[in-house]
Image (cartoon, rainbow, N blue to C red; front, side, top):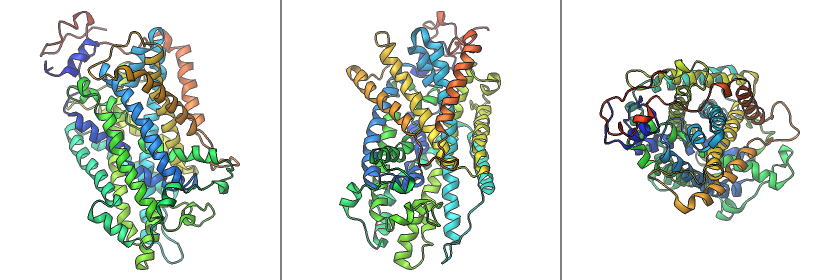
Amino acid sequence: MFSDRDTGTRRLLELGIRQKLHRPLHWTHSLMICVCILSPTTCITALYGQGLVYGGPVVLIWGWVCVGTLHTLAAFCMSELSSAFPVSGGLYYWSFMLGGNHGPLASWMVGWINLLGQVALVAGTTFTVVEIFTAVLFLATRDNNNNGYSPSSKMQLYLYMGLLVINATINSAPLKVLARIARVGAMCQILACCWFAGTFVMVAILLAITPKQQKWSWVLFEFRSASSYGITSDVYTFLIGLSAASWPLMGYDAVAHMIEETKSADTTAGKPMPYTLLTCFAIGMVYLLALTLCIQNVTNITDPASSLAEVNGVALMFWDIFEAKYGSGKGAVFLLLIPLGCGVFCGLHSITSASRMLYGFSRDRAVPYWWHWQQVDDHGVPIRAVWGIAFAVFLLGLPMLAGANAFNVSSSIATSGLCLAYALPISFRMLLARGSFEPGPFSLGRWSIPMGVIAVVWLLFASVIFMLPLAYPITTANLNCAPAAVGGILLLAFSAWILSARHWFSGPRTDVDNSDAVKTKYWVTDPPRKRS
């Protein structure tokens, strides 16, 4: 049954798409889920040590300001497109509608790039939880000789698999359950922010036990070279350091993937994405400032020759604070439970977003076995797409068995792929559909083109940054696989288009007779399906 009061459902009918998913979400629920997916508390915990190595405090703090501002501009541009085309799958559908004569090819390429980025994003967030949990185990068992229990690569893969199974199982529940969970997860982010920002009592406790806080001049302007990693250029160091700021802000396209499950999605599309970026920017800023103020021993975190080089940098920082104050660092374990808990929500809702992307792309028959992945259960949940994403993420975790740094691999692939997927539909809107684009209820007006130009330049630039090597000379241990992964999917997707897909993929499919779209705009019963 369709309600004539939901503008999102009516807009779907106008686009020739039959509503199958339920619409239980208010736009604030989408916002909460998206905040959980970005999870700045967890992602900064994972990459803070890398930021200290590549540029230090000045890159961490001011890089966050620059990157946050630019991603917010991109979010506004994407919200304008989402309002015009409120369809699950989002980016590849926009590309089809804006690509003109090249719409099917644009849709095909963007869809595959976005799907790769989504899978890598889920993998990266799951790796992050495993990394922080590993740090908790090490600190809980650490002795005076710096010995402690560190799970083997095989055990970490088991933890990774177990977390995937749990998250996929929860994602198989009705979406109302996930919306309630998202409220809790968003509150965890806010509480974590308060804990480290100095706003509530728990923050005051952390700052009170820090024996010696850094000077603000050091926090805001200290630059550190990465010569110990074979990098002599300060500009190169700065660019690599920006990756620590960009990764925690990736994944805001989740709003577009869940838009068919959001009430009046076309009219509210201008809110969730930008508000998500602003919320996460604020949380991340206070967390970064607190961490940088309270750090005790920078060398202990940044020295690649240290016996603790493989341990999470924030975990070591917490240990140093508690040890300097109380003679024992065991209290750090309890602080780490906050980013660990936030990470659990992050991984959970990342699967929610990625599965909707797979569902939308399968509905348009662009994925092998599309008829399987597009199925929804009685609660309107694409349960097969959920488990399909979980399996793909598991495959991306297998390099752990070979001792590879799986987090760096997945985060680089996710950021490079997603930045490219974000940039293409915005550029199509400016270059190919500038005169024909009809905005939805949310429009940037005369600011659309200037903001779009800035956003596209930044996104393409960021995509390249994450493909750069992190150390020299390049070895199998520090090799950045992002160029091979993103380049490989581009090559495979384009080859598949030339050899096969161009003969049968004509873009997103319609299952409502468009000739009757206007007549059925206000129906309250299922409109007739178009027979295939």
